[in-house]
Image (cartoon, rainbow, N blue to C red):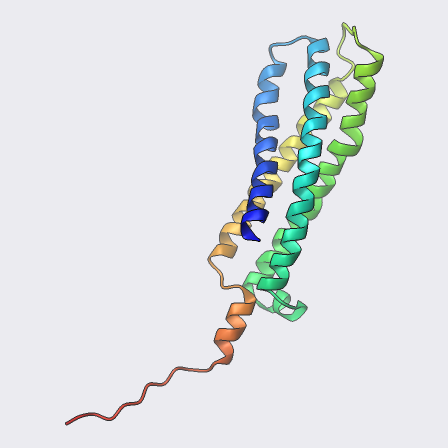
Length: 178
């Protein structure tokens, strides 16, 4: 289950990184019509990838949480559980920003492409600015999540800590052979 979670997350981050780095480089070298074309073809494709990745990350994350934490008490009382709560707290706005890309920017680009095929000005400037802002915010939130995951890797999952803590101290006894 870990590899499924990590693979889906890597696909999302990889696509996001390309949008954050490569698309702005291309914008600088093209006119308004080409910008509409580039964004209008890339954003819907990434939206499908991101949506599928998000579904897999969410489902596998719930399974991982149940396996590693187990219950609400361990979620609240263990270091691992608290780190997981911090991760979830960051995931919520990340999903909200991704929803803006999917439900606001993608349809706006589709409308612009279909109604202005020979545009000479740049009517998508507001959409491009919103898109650039949302991508930057997503990247910042993803970096924060990766940092929290780094912390989580140094902590024992709550289920393991509970098992280790319930066994009591280890005492070795042996007769000394004189």
